[in-house]
Length: 203
Ligand code: ATP
Image (cartoon, rainbow, N blue to C red; front, side, top):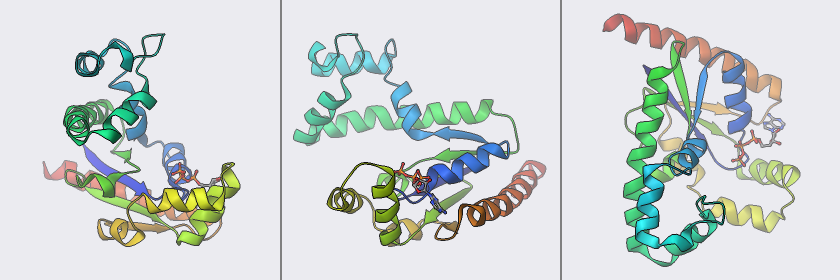
């Protein structure tokens, strides 16, 4: 299966981009949703987490207390490494399984923290949605009820614009209108469809 990974900073327009690919019939696999699914109630990984951190890591309804877990691993780097080595392969495997089961010439993986993960191999193309930081700040504060300072802190916690651009095969610049963005996505969709067909034919 031909795979495209989509990434971008906070408020850059990842959702606008992936929604347009979905409207074009592309299967979109969202890393954040998969990351929740692999530790859902009844999943073996959740049992592993409870074994390490105890029942107090669960909410009353038996679901993972994500906030408590975040606090625990923030405070302890060994716990953080342990958790990452448990979760990352499971998330990747689940995403690949979903991709294999998908219809259509290619799938789009939406991975907000791809540049941060350091794990950029295994995709046919990496598509970065890019805007200047000023636009990120403006769109994020317009959408969410957060201050400019909060948005700035979130930006600072992520990879820099240059770090993200350095992993890109394709860049979609999102400073124009949404219609401009969708036009660019339709062009990329054509290119990816052709590349995916060529890959299949080469097999
Ligand atoms: P996050 O990382 O915070 O989830 P995101 O990268 O998914 O954000 P979007 O939610 O797609 O970004 O876009 C951020 C905001 O900017 C949204 O309110 C969206 O409607 C708006 N937006 C995106 N692209 C454009 C555009 N080209 N013109 C105007 N507004 C836009």
